[in-house]
Image 1 (cartoon, rainbow, N blue to C red):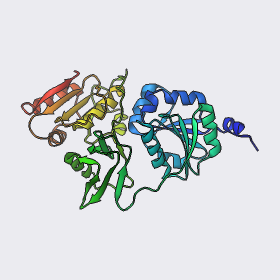
Image 2: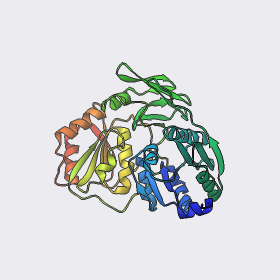
Image 3: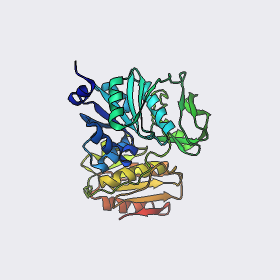
Image 4: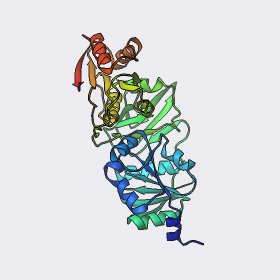
Length: 349
């Protein structure tokens, strides 16, 4: 039988990375150097942006960490950096609750958590190679009965469900529930009705399965890339944050993005800055500061002065030709159609 150190070197595990912070803080580069994983897989939309900016040899996915870890053959571990050690541990517990066992490397407090029936030999190896503390931990069952707890919140920060800001945290734990065909706050949340309305456009979510979080989705500013989108092609319409953006910007025929809403415009601008894709944003000033701003050359953001950004943006999407000759021409004609109804607040033409 192989000894533990031989087993690690001859059968290196897969490293699953969550969130942009582990790239921005240099954790991923350090873990690759110390742990020599067989493969590095990235979970999450904004993590993909940070990964691409880093230039590290990783594979990006659209899966959540629990789904990704459950699908992997052989040994694997999760690397995360929570905004605080408490929120990092809470995140690990949430992921562990969907698995049989989890080795969780939490970089915010230099700890390797061996959740539930984790591979303790792997956890010990990772702790020894990184110099982190090893901490056995047990997850608790999530709240049932249609309600959802979002723990680790900081009062005053945005609260998301499936990428949409639904309100502002007023306590460390937010509890929401499905009731009468909508989402209602039980405690800890100052509701943003416009956000709930936007979320419900896609249908009433299953809160037990929904992606829920609080705080900024990335604190570091974007890095502008050298790639530039084609001057002509298709305009992609994004009217909710992030989830469908990468499938659109990886289409070589896309020459620009029509982003509808303050937060959606901020996320699209941030992600597309490195991808070199210009954004035409329609906003009304109710953004939640969820990400550092940034826009590729050619981008324009218009703040509407009459009506709501959702209505005006969807009107533009329905009325304007989304297969223009050039991005420059489309922007010029779209601005002409909005004369008297808004003012330009970002202009990178």
